[in-house]
Image (cartoon, rainbow, N blue to C red; front, side, top):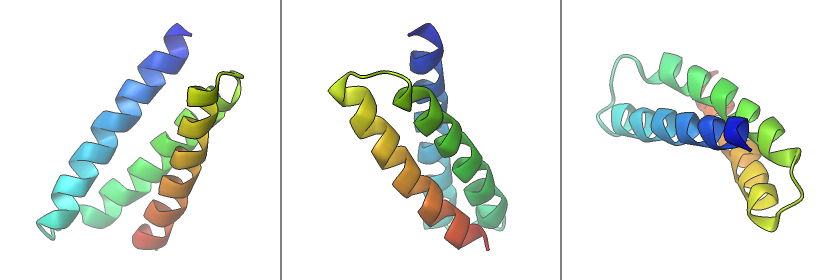
Length: 74
C-alpha cells in the first residue's frame, strides 16, 4: 500500500499544479496536461490493484482525468 499512497500523493500534486497552470492559461499547459495524463494513468493502474472501494473509485477518477488531460494535450 505504500506505493499506492505515494502514487496517489504524486498524482494529486501534479493535478493541482496542472489545474493551476491551466487556469492561468500558462504557456506550459499542454506539457503539464501531458504529464498529468501519464501520472493519472500510473495512479489508476496502482489503485486498481487493490480491492478496497476507495482505491477502485480513485482508479476510476484517475482514468477519467487522464482521458481529459490527453485530450487537452492533443
